[in-house]
Image 1 (cartoon, rainbow, N blue to C red):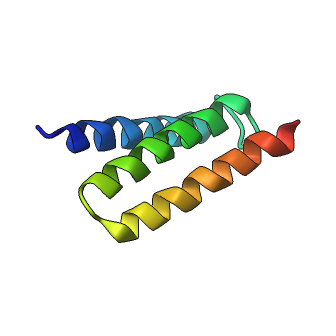
Image 2: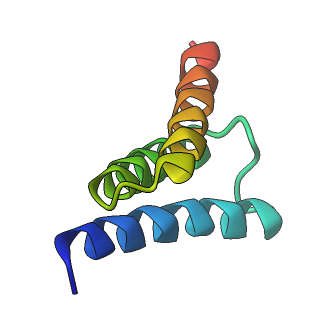
Length: 76
């Protein structure tokens, strides 16, 4: 398994964990943990996508990262 695969797998797992917690109503969309999971997960997935040169996913994950960052900043 390549390093990029591990980075992508961890990133996507964090995003899915956030979605799972949201679906189970363990967190809400404004929760700091929800936004942190999305921020870190999308950031890792963005970097992993960059490593494998998958530009559409780099764009998707970069936007996802920025939205999660906005969610964290908006809380303050």
